[in-house]
Length: 423
Image 1 (cartoon, rainbow, N blue to C red):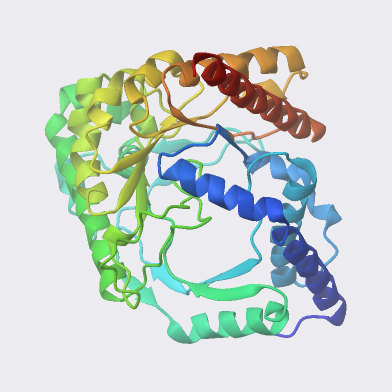
Image 2 (cartoon, rainbow, N blue to C red):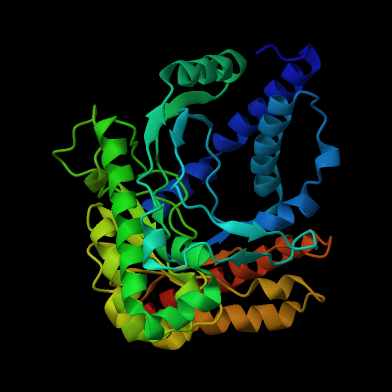
């Protein structure tokens, strides 16, 4: 694939800037801090910012200068790294890598959701039930995994020619592993119907979830059989926020030529069951998620659902390392239950970036959560995400991050003083 000379020049210039940022000493320091953090030897609370849906306001497409579609995609990825480094005083590690995903395809499930888009640009859509009787479960098929090795090598050659003398270009298989069988079931059955089924027709829920779980086991088996898994003990995004830096993966007897699930991080979540009881969550979600997760070396759990009352069951997940504590959770109660057993991955409320920005309120809000975690000795991270808009005020992200850094530094200072006074 030949790019226009102007596009090539733009991309290479941006790549050089990324390489310069990645070479800063602070990036190595952050990498070490994250490794200690993920190994449950925290130095301080960690902070990450993922603008997600708000990127369209921070980096509007009309700011891109490349013409070729592939070049524009690459330009956007590079500009995101540079924007993050220039604006967010968080703990993001900017790497000098350019990861080329292998051309892996996972076929459909036979029975596919029927989705109606929202009339609004970012509104909520709806699912119409397509799974209505037990007979419909027979329509669900085990997906097939295929890898086009020729296409993978073509992708790699394109990236190496473009960036090879600037960035560390490497071909990668599957690194981010996350299971969402509850979401799948609800999309096929309909959310309201899925809620009623747990009382009215539990056998249907169990049959559907068992079928979907079997499909996910088959996908992982296929990845492993075709040698398509890659280590994710690095800056790979983990669970619903965080990264995989750790010394604990892969295990000492790892075969570098063949990555297995036990060498990797994985995660699962059941947001759709946020309002069901802990007993129903255990019966209809964890029952199918745990066997998937127990195949992996380290695990995360949760996303936007409130797990406060469900932590006793969640914490039975083998090798659980990161738990998402949502904006709707009771942080002190969660901190008391988690302690230092695994990472308390707190998601502050993204609504603070809309309707005006109250710095004093944000500061007090963050201090309360950090204080609760500190009181129970938690391994604590705060991750701002699910920010679908900042109302075209990108500076609010900068302000939020500066406040978060201020709160973290004060926590570390106060802790050091208290240790000194009791020493």
